[in-house]
Every structure is written in C-alpha cells, then in structure tokens.
Image (tube, rainbow, N blue to C red; front, side, top):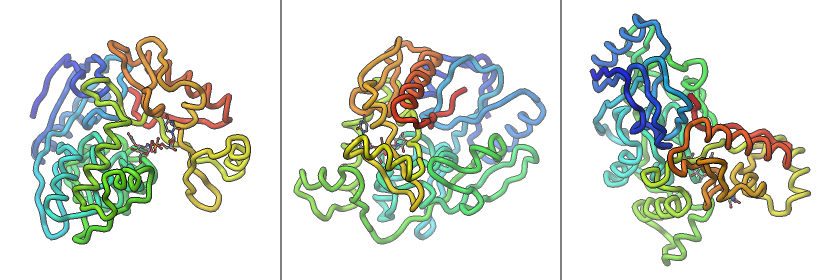
Length: 333
Ligand code: EPU
C-alpha cells in the first residue's frame, strides 16, 4: 500500500491542476484495499476515491485522504473479462477486440480507468459501460468485507449509478466483470460513424476498423489531455420535457436532439454552448475547446476556480438563451 503525505495530484487529474492532498493512498490488491478501508475507518477525516482523474476538477488543496486503485490484471473466462479497477479502460477495449470479444468498440478511447467505468457509466456513440458490466467486486469500507455487486443493483442511467449517490464513498472497487459477445454486431448509426467509414470506402467494417474510426473521430474533436488539459465532456447533455423541446425546435430549425422516450428529449449541451458563442473563447486561462464546445480546457496554468467561473458563466448564458439548466458531468472537489 502506498501512503504519502502532502502529495501533488497534478498527475492524477487530466485538467493538469496542481492541487495537493493531505494524504494519498493507493491499493493494488484485495488485502491492501482491506487495509485502506481500515485506515479510512480509523482516520476519521474526509476522503475521496479517484480513478484516472479524467472526470475530476480540483478547485482547492484537499485536506483529507485521496484513495486510488492500481489493481491490475485482465483475465478471461468464456465471453467474460474480469479487469482490475486500476486498468486503463481503453486497454480493455483493445484487448477484447483482439480476443474476438465484441461490444465495446464504440467506447474506444474514452479516458479513464475500469473502476470509473462502473461508477460513471461512461458512454459514447450509442454504447454505455452498463451494457457490458455484469458485476463489480469491491471492499465495503465500513466493514472491510469483500462483496460482489450485480449490475441490476447499481441503478445505472445516463452517466449515473448508485456509486455516485447513495453508495458514494462506500466501496473500494477491486475489479469489474464485463460480458462481451462472441459475434460482432456493429453499431454504426450514431453521429458520423457511417460517414467516416464510407470516406475510407468501408461499408462492413471489422471490429478493429470500427475501433480505429471511433478513435480518429474522437481525436479530431477532443483535445489530448497531455497537450491541453481537459476532462472530456464537461457537462451532461440535459434531458428536457417534450413540450420544452417542441418550443425550442420551433425557434431553432434543425436543432440536434436524441429522443429518450415519449415524454423526454436529450439536447446536446455542446450545441447550446456553441449557439451561445462560447466555442473557442476563454475566460482567464480557462477556455472552451474550438472543435467541441462541450469540452472545457486549461489553456495553461488555470486554477480549478477559473474553470468553475467559466462553467458558471456558460450555465448562466445557456439558461438565459434556452431556458435550460445544464450541469457538470465532472466531479468538482
Ligand atoms: N455540436 C455543435 N457544436 C459543438 C458541439 C456539438 O453543434 O461545439 C452538435 C454536434 O454537431 C451534434 C451534437 O451537438 O449534432 C452532438 O455532438 P457530439 O456528437 O459531438 O456528441 P455530444 O452529445 O456533444 C456525447 C458524449 C461524449 C461522446 C459523444 C459521442 C456526453 C456528455 N458526452 O457528446 O462523451 O464522446 O456523445 O457519442 O454525453 C465524455 O463523456 O467525455 C464524452 C466525450
């Protein structure tokens, strides 16, 4: 178990913000996670559990304990892979394809760790982690007991799960079991996937070709955090009542949207932010990415507060123009 004091989290958040924590602990095995649970129970100071830091905005030094998993390993049984919570999620996607296990192609290149995939229900191009997750193995902090949590218990929704609410800070995730399909059933009818494949003269892609295409679409729109600090989508796409959607659609012809059900419609926050004129603009050292307005970036040396100030200004402007509230997808500390 790694246990450090007064530790900089710069390498642990993709915004690249240089905030410190009073204590930083890392577990790499089940036994170490049980030890960390004990430490958290006895220390009686606040703690947070982080993953790859790709959904984290640090606005201050943290006076408590930051917990991080480095549990590794990917093991296969039939169509299932049990993956250590500290594995990079995209490595699991790459390995699954090379093993002839399908279903994760559209989730290629999403930043973050395996553990976070189960907490955040990461998603892209019509696919979500919850469709692959079968169960989660974790240590319950209050008791030190190892337990297995089934998918159905997690109450998964769009970028939501019980781990973010009732179960916040309750478990140290050890591994996630994903179930794949042995047959490749490509999902191409989302965004510009089909158009991008057609550009390459491909109508029936292999899983690897689909993965490569998703990667190139993402690379064209989303900045590389190693070059320009960011946390992917900063806001969640709001879901509005159909009446509200009809009202807006009458004003904005061709407004992009996704039907959720008979009563609800999802509107891309990136489109609304773009319409407000924010794309490519900055407030202090925080900015809005010039290729995708849903992504806030650290233009260099920005503090977490500068990013929050930009976030709040955008929320105000979107509310004023569209009458819609938008909320961060990232966890603000
Ligand atoms: N749009 C604009 N201007 C912009 C951005 C978007 O007009 O600056 C329009 C696009 O033209 C499109 C629509 O808004 O018509 C939606 O944009 P896009 O397809 O890029 O997807 P998104 O809704 O902005 C979501 C996910 C992404 C995921 C993509 C692809 C959320 C919060 N974000 O973004 O996830 O990659 O779909 O499926 O649901 C992430 O979570 O970090 C992430 C990148």
